[in-house]
Image (cartoon, rainbow, N blue to C red; front, side, top):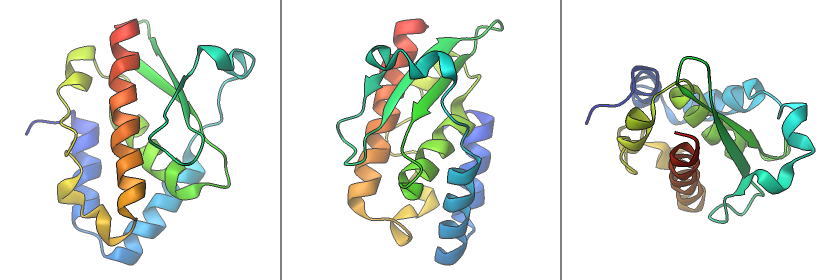
Length: 141
């Protein structure tokens, strides 16, 4: 399985962590997740909902000047686990090409052993976010 370099680095980092380190790192990712840019706050209807998540998650993608795709997500701050998982995806995929994004398999996270730190329900949402990111990438790609 070949992943974009940034995403592979994240997968490798998590694979070597203990359960406690995974939880701490997820919280750090959640805290580092940027706020939704103002231009999207007023255009929420253009954002794609992710119904697989119990937490309200909305996303949108746009192409940058280099041809890479950038993702923006709106997730409540009081949902740090979901924000952390989504932040892994944005950190790992932002700036990638459409082909790189579409090549990420749904089970790419398995070596991370995230099930040690989060519930299967959260992992299902994580997979759903990735699927919707792919759909959004195709729209702008």
